[in-house]
Image (tube, rainbow, N blue to C red; front, top):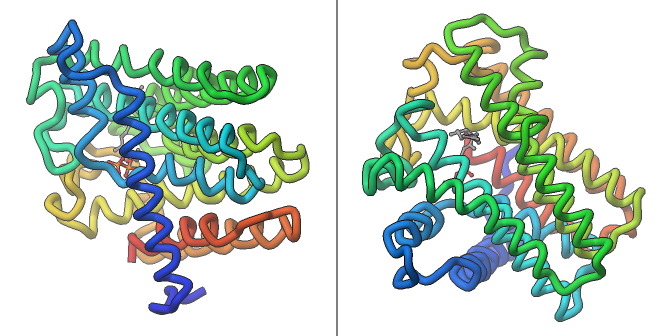
Length: 309
Ligand code: GRG
């Protein structure tokens, strides 16, 4: 599959992505406590961690999955906003904690000092702590059927916990300096990064009350995309500079961390990302007429993989 041409389709996707980004920023602002609410320093740190940067890919996946599954009522729009804010809150907390000296010990994130550098370690830790329950407050407020709210809460909790993102982070920390097999690397990334991306897509489907077959096919798309995201992140770690990434480039190899590039080499890692992009497109095709709007899902698969080219 070749890179997308600069066609009307690409321009429509770029406009959708930008509108979605703005919608996400507004939802995040609505769901965050104001900076002048006590305890002010904690709220300032939470807002610093969440606002002012980020591609908002996870929020975009919530909206794209919702649109694919036909979520088009006013109530489902409000629920999608809440779910989009929830996944970005979990993501922001994970970045704040990941950057702490006891973990990755990084000083640059989204082109700015990391939260513990800008505030202090205890404040950054608490800001991350507070963002986690805030995500579930958002989900609990969704104006949809209570059974769907419960499904959404379970989906995000499972993806964030010890069998998902936190478990993946634990494996990651334990694997520094060790040689991992490709299977072990994949398991780690499916948990650490893939689980939240996958949950973002599942949440859009839950809000829409999508059928089980549609959810399963969307999950095939989500799994390919989740892995592709990490493969591309590894490629960018060696091929882009810190200014372009907004975080410290080359950190994985400097920290002696196993990556797709260290295991496969750059070319084969790029080929793998392409294979996964093809799988994601295949899943969209398999949804057939059940998919009410496929362009955002297709555009996001291309956006995620082609940024590594
Ligand atoms: C500390 C519990 C805990 C978990 C941390 C996801 C994670 C687990 C750490 C992030 C470390 C990292 C840089 C992983 C690589 C993939 C990734 C999540 C990149 C950052 O996501 P983007 O590119 O970031 O979507 P933006 O800034 O655009 O939101």
